[in-house]
Length: 119
Image (cartoon, rainbow, N blue to C red; front, side, top):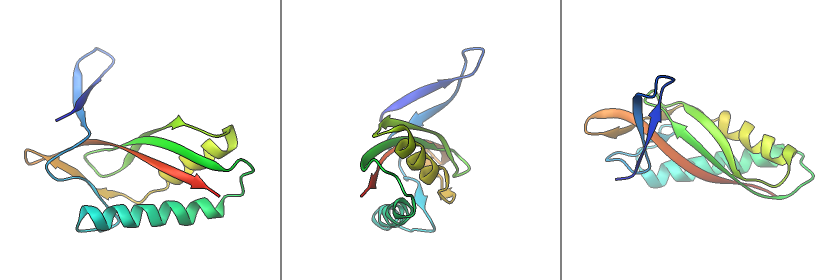
């Protein structure tokens, strides 16, 4: 199990960010990981086509699904250009709420990394 501690301003651990949990978050009402990944990729692909960016390529975005199922802390890991990177972040921040990830019977923070391709 991989986790990253998240610290508050007084340096106490608020929660762990997991990469893998017993029950992974599911996107857009999906009931399986496979269905969730398919719906997520379809949403990202559809939205990327809506943006008119000059710089084409792949933008890698890291984000966390919080215990309420919302996307938080989205950031560019590898970008293309400022405009393209901003567009990729906008797509990820527009994701519908997820079904939260579960570890030991509790909703937990789960980190994801996805690619957003602009063609």
